[in-house]
Length: 147
Image (cartoon, rainbow, N blue to C red; front, side, top):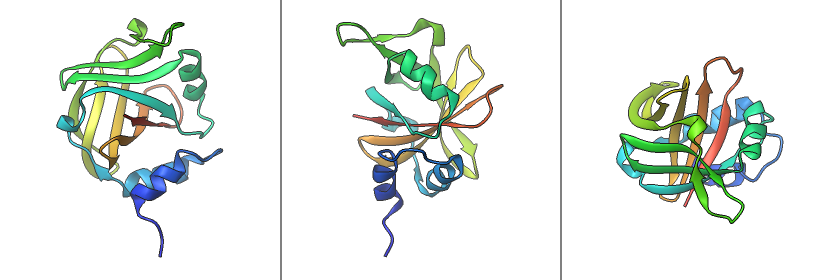
């Protein structure tokens, strides 16, 4: 018997050298998430697909995302020297909307000033799986958020 998609996701984010096709296969199996399931600060991590955005997030000391409401999101929070989290103004703000992606309606985070949309899927109450679609950037950056 194979593991549930949620259990697969928990193991998946620990793996090294994941293919984009494998990441999409898992993403497509996970349940949609609703905008009201996002509250407060979430820590973030990259799924290792060797996408160029992984290096950018590391350079930014990416800490995750802060969700105050569906209209008020800080999409890129970074760690400061003292370990605290701070909003990265270069990436602006964002908002949440239900959108169709890969045949399923799920929550998307639309950046206000960048041609970027992040799509989310539910793993468990404290773990989400994400796919970043950025205009002009080849491929999809996969990430996860956790509390």
